View 1: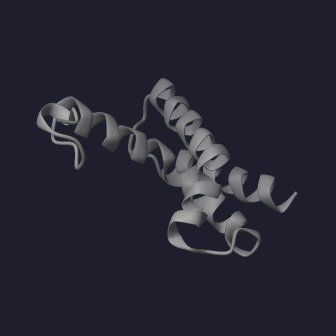
View 2: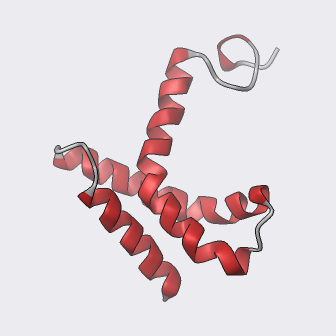
View 3: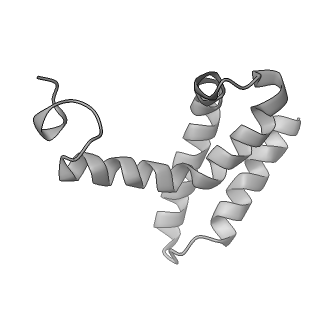
Length: 93
């Protein structure tokens, strides 16, 4: 129940503090936040070397708040071809 609450609070804060006033853009950001909070919490905890059971709720809430911006940044980097991995235009050589 704490996990659902932290994701819900993160999504609410993302909605309230979103600079975008278009309802469709806000819903897109919330959907991305929900996706990252659901599927990215475990891998982020592993990558950061944190104990999952202790940090799960905090990481899920943070990913819910910032998931839309993270998705936007990844798409902008992919579109520009300046990905931090791979070769020319993001393709491995």
